[in-house]
Length: 228
View (tube, rainbow, N blue to C red):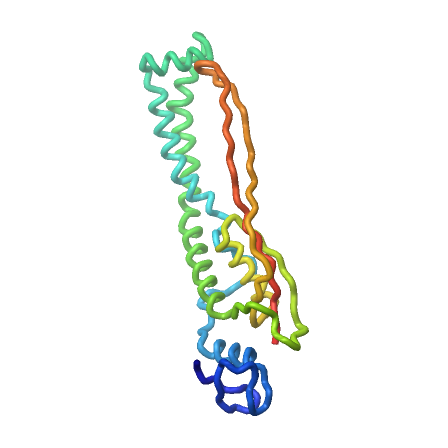
């Protein structure tokens, strides 16, 4: 139990009560006021279009994959009997030498040229990621999560968010609450859906057919935003 100060009559009372015993002001309103007093402004200028995982995350993936792909290309260009046999089985006797040259020389150089501009974008990605984390921490402190909608509340808005992770979906919900200038959030429903895809392919080397399946999850949240 803690004492909170009523915003209407300025008298203190227990936060366990539903309303101020002196003037009847709802406790939830006073709780939000007390909560807001303790929150420092966000150090990041929130524009409203931020995401928890910056949309440029593919840059970091490319920076990691390109050197690995270049190394593979160089290794495949080494004229060992095993490599020659692979190229001959795919392209025939007349084309494998030129193909080995292209893979071993052209692809690595192209990868180097491509990785240079991508590497310059990497610091921007890290900056945006750090800002998104700071915004998320601010949201967690600012918005009160309630189990039910309090009585006599008419200023509400129902929103639906979805993302690849539950944390991203929650961040998107916080962002909607921020843009609505909400005081509290009631989560009505949260669930996850799984999408499974399959593929079948023929193996060029060795013959035969192989198949594979992949699955991806999508997290959904339905919530009510509340203004006091």
